[in-house]
Length: 122
Image 1: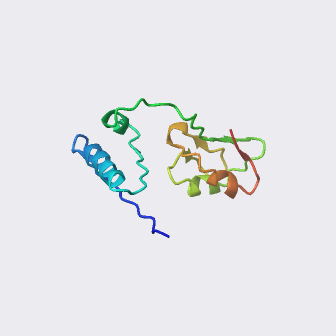
Image 2 (image 1 turned 90 degrees about the vertical axis):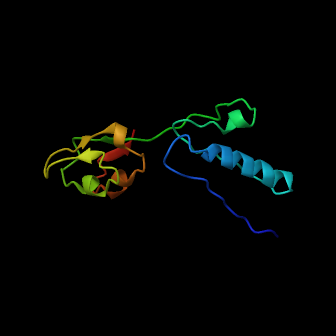
């Protein structure tokens, strides 16, 4: 059985040629007999399909489950605020945390850690 390998072409600057390198490398490997999966993970401007002469198609919706805090159950312990990796929750001890949806990853850590079960996925 052959060993699976992963190759990543990455960088922070746009226009440096990452997609060009990735598409050409994938095509070369496929041409010489390798099974290839090319993933264009550019969230701002995915364009590998253009290089390959393909149409983009929507595979499905991406749903991010954001927390809903039940104000009747929350006691303001702030465990959710402390565990949130993106600081999407902000609060003072004893108060209901404020939620910033644009910062939320939908990881549900806040709901998992809440001792009062005051946080549900919305």
